[in-house]
Amino acid sequence: MTLRVDARASFSLVGSVLKYLAVPLCFPLVVALYYGEPVAPFLATILVTVTVGVGLERLDPDPDLRTREGFLMVAATWLAVALVGTIPYLIEAHGLPPLVAPVHPESTLAHPANALFEAMSGFTTTGATVLGDISFESHTRSIMLWRQLTQWLGGMGIVVLAVAILPELSVGGAQLMDAEAPGPGIEKLTPRIAETARALWGAYLGITVLQAILLYSLSVTGVDPAMTLYNAVAHALTTMPTGGFSPEARSIEAFSAAAQWIIIPFMVAAGTNFALFWHVLTGDPRQLVRDSEFKFYIGVLAVLTAIIGGILFTGGFAQVAPEGGTFDAAYLDTVSGQITGQIEPAIRHAAFQAAAIVTTTGYASMDFNAWGPAAQGVLLFAMFVGGSAGSTGGAVKIVRWYVILKSLRRELFTTAHPEAVRPIRLGGNPIDERALRGIYMFTLLYLALFVAAAVILFVDALRVGLNVTVLEMIATAATAIGNVGPAFGSFGPMGGYLSLSDPSKLFVVFLMWIGRLEIFPVLVLLTPEYWQR
Image (cartoon, rainbow, N blue to C red; front, side):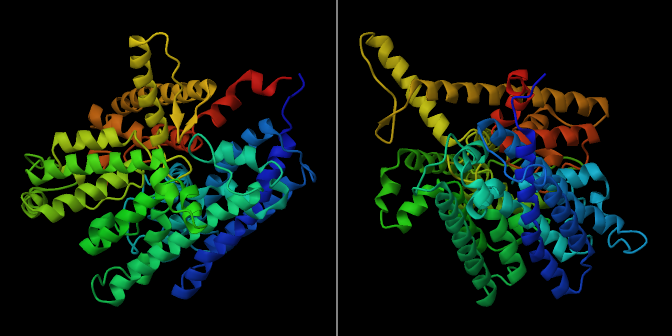
């Protein structure tokens, strides 16, 4: 059988990306030197990624990138960077015998399945974690910063970054960006796709730096001493990619209300189409108010904030603290007393969690396990909404729901007026019927995969005797495929996924991978038609 795909060309380009992954690895290396921590985890990883990258590049010195090769290259790249991302975690736990002693042999990331889970969660910006103890007593500052950096690299996209800086990827850059970037498509902002990629990454970097400065100013002014320079940089690295990792065990609850208010608009910005920022920076701010997707996105956030805020304001919290849960009776009494009947905290926590879940950032301003069923039901709904196309957010995407609602409205209209011809428009432009079918098929496939994943995870939990509820497994499946992060119960914002069996962890790794690439680029690789001539 003759293969229809030039796999050598695809893996050669994967090698190019891996080779240059050594550059961002220098950042935690410098941090390790500053804090006097072992540098072996990063030096060894740099050596491995450069060696493997150069070796793969030699498979095809002059690769010809077509659409089929693009799908394989993107899917393989995300899998490869996640595998490389596990190396620092494993070396911190095991060392490099007999040359380097382990630093934290007690780390939960000593297990390869856990290390892969954490790395894939980082690069896919999911934010789900299997760290048993999130603290600097159990992990070095440089390793924790590497964890944050994986999300920043994965946010705008590893391959989009490669298209921006590697000339050999510029020719097929449009196919690569369409295959990797979250959402129905990437708007071409400039005549050359490489320039578009650089424009997107420029906006991404600039907003990240701005957030870090604003957060650190809270520490400098004495408003929030806990927001040190390290914490400011660490959280800026995981807000814009809608990642949600935090070096603090209590996530954003560990910081002041001022810090939470600063983070909210940046999460909203992270869920916005980055092409709109380019238009604003080039002197056309009216694009924001003209963009129908952006207006619908802000409207959804406002409605969810109002609903959750009303529930919290009226005391919509859990009745009792569950035994062995992530919060106790004292915590429940404290938060309900601080929020019930209080406008500012009710609005703040509602706006924060609505933005965090809709944009799939996954931060938590409090343990929402302490919320009542009504508020948690709203959060479960929000897990399927997603950010805008061309943003770093995951899930279904707001533009698809917008188009589906407009399509439903059209069907109702044409039922009453069968002779009418009424195209669906987005931003004043008619949407091709083939594109509409693609949106319907993606959404149906997404929901079908979610249902199947929830069943598989729940059955495996029963198999190993894990005490979980159906709601917890439903939310776990939704957060994995939607790259959201926290679910409910022990898998909630103050918990983690460590209790899952190894097969379930690897299945969640698959869900995070396929969810970040929006299903089709991975599933197409599993069809015989893709490979056969």
